[in-house]
Length: 237
Image (cartoon, rainbow, N blue to C red; front, top):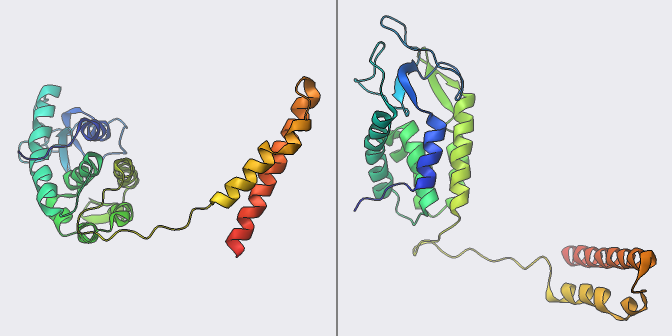
């Protein structure tokens, strides 16, 4: 059975695309702003679009309005080749949200662009961390035959990167394990903090009244300073 995007990804895509029942120009304003209906004979600066980002020969200036049910049906049909492309082209493991982020990208940029992208090449080499930066490069749209940076696409790539980050990291069987660095706070540092907080000095703090609270706050602050100094020395060592 072919892999499909999860509910989180589909909801994100619908929110980003927004359902528009009439045909509009995708170069017409920013996402979320009111669209202008394309009527017969009107010039299309970008791409004639309808429903949830649907394009094609059945979308043209003056085409009849559609219901949201039809828009969802178009969306599912449009997503199917994108889902298959991501499922077959990506050779490393993906979480559901990571899969959804790439499908959203392929849906917007095009399957051919996704398959030929440096993003896919780096990802298949196990470089998961490169994906957000590679997504950000796809921030241009075509208006009147010219490629220009689109604020809408900048934000869209950021949204896809955010969905990707929510997916977390899954290491494939062929990806070498990442080297683990030393912990910032070691057992020795924890011991210093514990001694400062629970050692003999605390037993002389009054147990009631404002003086107790004031002295307690001072001791806790002092313990934090000790911990910070200890960490700094470890870093400089």
